Length: 431
Image 1 (spheres, rainbow, N blue to C red):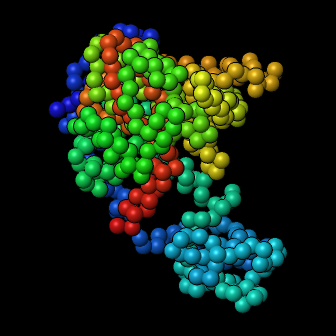
Image 2: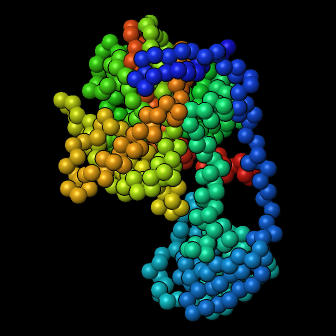
Image 3: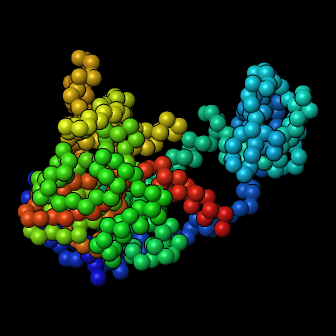
C-alpha cells in the first residue's frame, strides 16, 4: 500500500495545498537493487601498469602506460612503505616512526619488478615494494588523479535535485521487514541516503523500538543529546526550547547546528495526526549550494569561508558551536556539509563591520534558493512511513497544522553512518 503523497500547489507560507494522486510505487525510480559496484574488476587496469621510472634529486617520477605521470617524494615513499615492519595490515595503521629517518633520505636503488611493481632499496638496507595500481590511486599534487577521481565519485554518488527532478526520479520506499533481514536491501538503503540525501522505509511499526532498530542498522547506535536518546513527542507539550515542539510553520533548516559535530542523520516517524496541515518539506541543500556557486560565486565563497555561530538556550543549557554555512571538502572542493539554520543563528557580533552587508547578501541569496517553490519537495508523512534524512545535506521543514501530531525519531552520528557506508562500498567492490 503506498503511503506517501506528493503535494503540489503549495504556497510559500505552507498553508494551502492541493493533493495530487497517490504515487504508483511500482513505477517509481530506483526500484532495482544497486548491483553495479559488484561488477568492479579486481584485476589490474591496463592503464595502471608502470611504463617507466626516473629518479630525481628529491623524488621518483613514475609513468604509466596510459600516458599519465606523477612524482613521489623520497620521504613520502619511505613513510608509506607497506611492509609488515612498517605497516600493520590487520589494523591498517602505520608502525613506522618518521623520526627514524632523515628528511633528505634518498633511495639506494629504484627499479621495476615487472610492470606492476616498483621496488626501492634504502641506505639502511630496508626494502620497499609498491603495487603499481596502489601508486596510481594514491598519487598526489597537481599531477595526481586524487582530486579528479574524488570529484567524479561525488558526482556519481550524489543526485542533486529540485522539485521537478526528485518527483520525476523519486526513489521507492524500502520495506521495514526487508531492510532488517536482508543485507542487500540494507545496502540499498545506505546508497539511497547518500545518493538522494534521504530515504523512506514503509511498513514501519509504530513503536519507538522500530525506529531504534533502523538507527542501529545505519549507525550502530543512537546519538544521544539533550533531547534524549529516542524521541516521542507531540505539539501539546513544549518539552524543549525549540520551534519543532510547536504547531507553527517551519522553514527549511538542518538540525543541531549548535553542536560542534551536527547529527549526521535524522529519523522521523509521524505515528499519529488528528487534524489538518502538517505537511513535510525537504530541500536539497547541496543543490541549493551548487546553484548559488553557479549564479553568485561571490556569495558562495562568503558562505563557505565565513565562520558563523549558532546556539541553543534554555534555563539549564546554553550550547554554542560554529562553522561555515556551506562547508567544502578541503581536498577536492566538493560539498561536504550544510550548516544552515536561521532559527539557531546567534547574534552576529562575530562579523567585522565591513563584512555585514556582503554576508547578509550571501545569506539572503542562499535562503531565497531554499525558499523557492521550484526547489521544495512537499509530502505527507503518515503512520508506517519512516523518513531518514541526511542532516549534513538536506534541509527539512513543516507546514503549520491543527490538532495533535505525535512524532518519533532520533539522531545518528555522521561518522558512524559514513564509516559503515564506506566499509560497505569496499566490501561490495571485492565481491
